[in-house]
Image (cartoon, rainbow, N blue to C red; front, side, top):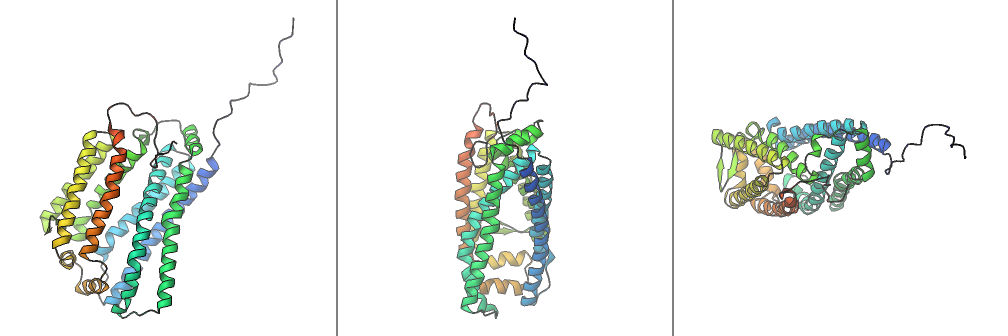
Length: 343
């Protein structure tokens, strides 16, 4: 009889079929926190820039006009720090939300860089209208520097974040370190992305009465005062409710959001086609000196806003048609990336 085989120790543990990315999650978590710090610095730069514009236009610094941008960047700073801490701790919710944020950031960059390349030369060419003449060669340098910087910050950097957090190894590492299902696992990421932005939009809409005094463009007219404030409240509630319907994968939420986008886009088209843009700014509380500065620059016009409304509606509707398949009856198993690739 052959002797039983000898065992010198416990059986070897199974080798995982993924590469451990905890070090990468630590590095990118620190990067996220640094981006949060950068957002706080941008708030300071916004205040400084507005102070310079106010000095040029000989007007008082309008804190109310800065409030929407300040709130946005402060919220973004808090989100980056929160996601950075979650990434360092290898939390699956942090990876999901970081991927949503990175994809949204990248989409904004892909759109805004070409738009800036179209608008900025005209704004710089009209600088002489404000008494700030610049040599032609310097204008070219400023334009190239601005576009390169925007490409790095709005395209390259988010693309790097997308490539990292979309990796199946990163997903598997987070699932191994954080095995408990989280609220971000309840629906596919492309749907969760829309729900999160609807919830954020609901919060931002609530700041409009304070910033704009209840001024709201609506189907060729300008609503202001308490009626505009009431409409802002209705929109905020609607956006929050639609976000909940999307999170629950309710088909009615998809149809209602599409209808809301079409209606609001038609309202913008009617308003910007007939209402004087300067009158809208005047009711929002812009001083006459700033209105004159906007008027002399020339590029921010009704026609420009009409084209922006149409151009922004097309990709949004395309995205909504792409995610419509997630709202079909039946169970939805697994996680789907915002970019459509398998995790």
